[in-house]
Length: 249
Image (cartoon, rainbow, N blue to C red; front, side, top):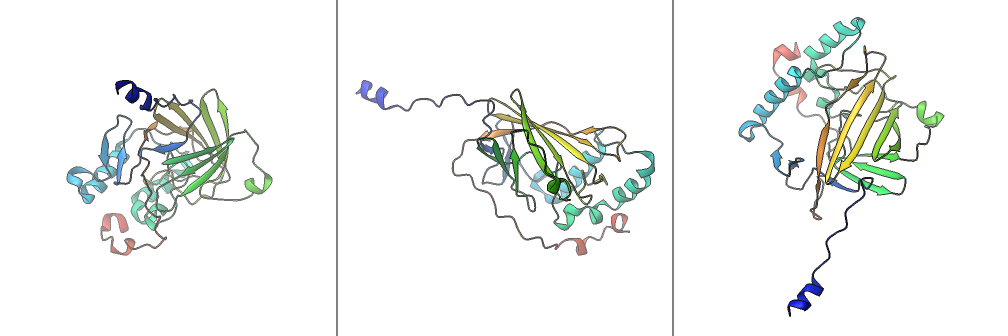
């Protein structure tokens, strides 16, 4: 009987290649974010309170020393957009966050030299990333989009994605961090075991020098029952109810 059980036991899954990015990364159906350490952190802040979340998020982002540095001629515009960020930030009127603000994908589907990035956000849902190093076409470069057009290539086991052809409507961050249509975003993704690493660099004519985001990590989610919430329609319900006169003017 022991021998029969030994024969019937499933073999362990073979180790996956560092270039195999397929899977769900850091997301599960219970509405919590899985960290690289395997723990689960609620979306809400202190005491699972939405008000505390908004307050803590604002303090943390505004105190972060890693921020894009703008040329002097843009300082006054940035200051005004920062002051009116809640009313002016397109994310607060259910527009896409755009690249790189939307961050790493929650799911990656890999088919040869084509990757599909899937996002569980309200307005950012998918991207298609070729990984054969192809050049963007004139038609793509002549367009202006929220997420840009992307082309990827492998540098060793690191996927390097360059995106161009952005509109100038998305923000890099809600503290008034805008960009021009000249923006070029370079993302890097690499896998170490069951952890996905992501980081992006923004090069733009409005900036004194390129700006690199913090590195983010996502843990592979083995739950085969994971599902995404449906993305809601773009209907703004909250803006007219904001009464903070320090922000709204």
